[in-house]
Structures are given as structure tokens and as C-alpha cells.
Image (spheres, rainbow, N blue to C red):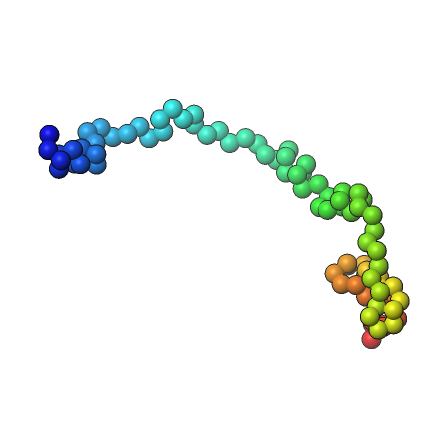
Length: 83
């Protein structure tokens, strides 16, 4: 065989390949039981394991700051009053 015939043989197939050779068809499992177990209580389990954070000090008045009900940012009760 010549070189061009060898290269052509690499890219041509005489038969179509099997669609899924040796594969088992996928059977979906019912995941509804796992959804509740995975969801859990969010990060509540982690909050129960960790100690409470050490309060930061206010840069203005040097008093300990606190976390509000929704702990997004530290607040100083003396300096950060709700107006």
C-alpha cells in the first residue's frame, strides 16, 4: 500500500460503530428520599458545632460589637443606632 491509502484507511470505516458498546442502559432512581436528607437544616448543624464568634471592638468607641439577628455585618450598639 502506498502512503495515501494508509492515511485514508485511518479516517474511513466500513461499518458503523455500536451506539453504546458494552454500556448498560441508564435507569433513573427515585431521589425524593435523598433530597430531604441532603437538604437538612442548612448550616444549622455547623452553627451548633462551632463556638460563637469573638466580638470585634468598635474602632470609634472601643466597645464590643454584636451580630444582629441576621448576621451580615458586625454592629456597635452604641455607635450604630437605628434611626
